[in-house]
Length: 83
Image 1 (cartoon, rainbow, N blue to C red):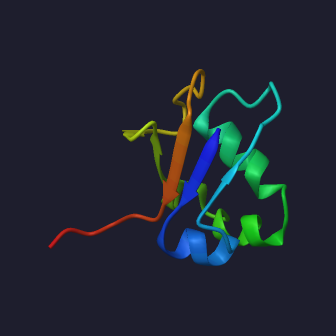
Image 2: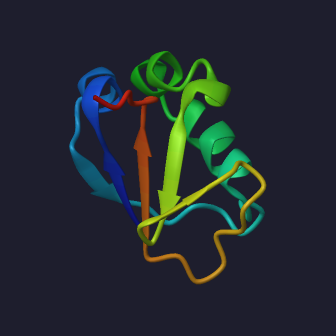
Image 3: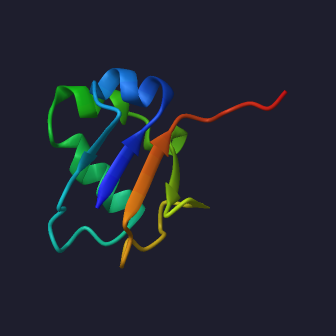
């Protein structure tokens, strides 16, 4: 699946996007974030507060328990304000 990172998540990880193949036991958004946090200090820093990270799966905003089954793209970004 393709991961896309935005704003300070991108800055902290140091990549705008990447292709990943998570382990079979990573089935939800929460599990994906937990797995990513183990990939290195830059990921841990960017995703240290999982509740603050907003996620879209195939361009649809979802919550942490959402399934990743069949997902082609997952976007991670910090909370945004309107204006």
